[in-house]
Length: 218
Image (cartoon, rainbow, N blue to C red):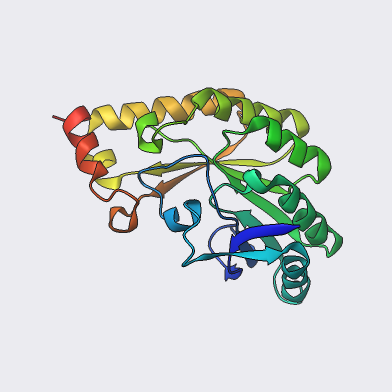
């Protein structure tokens, strides 16, 4: 199996309390305007290459001497679902914590993952307002993904990418974000919620914050 990914690396910040080997799988079904990993999401050949699955499994085995966690992220890792399943199985076999970051718009694939190799934690985005995610973002699919995780007993953390300058100055923006989080928690009341501040300087569309400001805050 060939896997398209960026070079694996260590992360101390993506999964609280864990030293992770991160594998960032290339490709995404969304084109989020705020995305920090947009080169990986777009499959940019300057950061993405093809790996035999066995090579990545070997990376997991080597990292397990130090790392406590395998994080499958992206891009959208569930687009390469079979690879994520095999990497998760390798991590579990080695006694590692297995975490997945997903945009949560592919609930059927998420359910297949959980039934094949239950992650210890899933981190998913709630994007508000929806236009920050560009075309193809379906909030109803995110709600369904949360229901899948709740039904199958998988720990979920809702991450809310947020423009700090708007959150602090624009009541309408705060209201939209709060409503999206409320709807997500209605699907999985015990999910954790984390706010992720967007760094516009490295975003796919650095000026989109100004578009939102004009439409919501003036």
